[in-house]
Image (cartoon, rainbow, N blue to C red):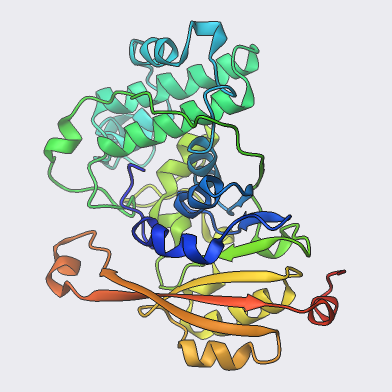
Length: 352
């Protein structure tokens, strides 16, 4: 993973694996998949995986890391490395990213605001590569797995040269060495074996969950709205040209605002979600910096099934800027394990 992602569980993967365990007949449903680090842990344990997020870039990044070499031979190009080389050698294209998210925005965008997310050269290379991936898929030169790999590779490459503090909430006023670096895609090591995979991009309440599934929940638990903090990754993934606003050039995102990011709504939203999931086992990751008090959440889940809370480990707080670094406090990570009997499953709407 090439993003310092808010709430990432990459650092507690080993601890989570002990609770995920071996496959039990159902799927491992990563309902808020983020960058897919936990889904990868489950895949390594042999689970069938279902990825979901309400943001397309998250599903793209997560699905890309689960693709095997057999699924993505890149036969049309003589192999994966050759496809990467062709994309890296493309000429610049002055498209939407160049127009809105490089210094060219001062004269090329209706906003007349100079945005410094990417250098003009890197922005134009992002436009060229994204357009070419679309064209290759349209012309039948890429299968679904190959497209997923290349989109994930492009998102990673873009992040390595983004002139940001950690998220895309805004750009930095002065250029960093990272921002001056040259964008280049890097081939990754693809998985040795295929992982059975379902993907969806829906609100978690619309997710298709089965009684034999194990559902993993890692919801947002602070005020940070992912739809605004990572808006450019969403635009690159979708390849669209939305009307953007403000100094940051945000795409429309409020329709994707999460109730879990609002302190007054989070407890009810999370409790309702868990009560409504017809799965025999639910794993909920949570943190000491979250809006919801764990004791209050346990009280709200009384009667749903067997509920146990396990401390995982303490990790450093996410530090996107100097202010956050100065606080330098630790965050305690927990896992709530919820198990249901057949009768409790029926009460939740599932059929045992």
